[in-house]
Length: 336
Image (cartoon, rainbow, N blue to C red; front, side):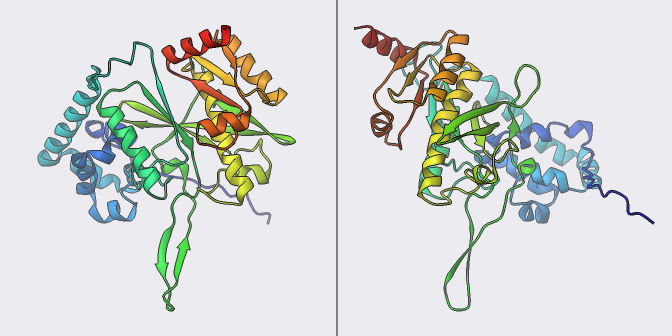
């Protein structure tokens, strides 16, 4: 008798209509700095909440449907749920800027690039102080209603768990993240296809899938190199935060900067692009094609090494300028 084909089937609990917005709450990292929202999930099943790493999205995949039904009939839980939803709606309905910065004009947009973002343990793409600082900048930007977008890398392995063995030595234990359980969603184009960006590295092109995490009012775009278009070697570029050798680290920097610019060009959030004087022909052709199609000026900059040094990074072939006033100033300088 021949063996049949095996299939994996995932069965998720049905969320009662009265609690349908739990999914919305689970997919906005606003919960990372709103304690009542996190407490709402914990009340459903404290043990499961702890074992799921305090991840609302992972929690909703595992909680018993019976428990959700009970909660939908519990007046106390519903009261807490309604207060959380009311606070969430009030927060997101308020669009008036709170920063009082007169330098920002209508249409300006701040782009924040970082190798790690420490927003919450449910999105493990950070390892230390830099990530926590970047995460706090995002949270503050949301609270202040700043015109702000963040760009980073989506790692399968972010921070590691530490254990001590019998000899007192520290052991680092890495585990791959399941993106389906992270508070991220693929970015889609107008045709409903996943957005991909391409970066030229020596002798080959590397592709990256674009994901989006919602952080209160603002978006965090994350680049993922683990896609079938890439070789096994290139799929590993973004596998581990600060992983690999020196070459891998430089490749991560290049992808974050160049692919980040292209992703923003495709999303229409760039006012001008500065191309390094020695940018590769393929980078020049692709960036210029995207920019011209959207009516975005392309300016000639210094060498990639000089441009990267000015930004405090590895050599950079292209930089997107979000600030319209800065873009206008750069264009005037380029005409002189």
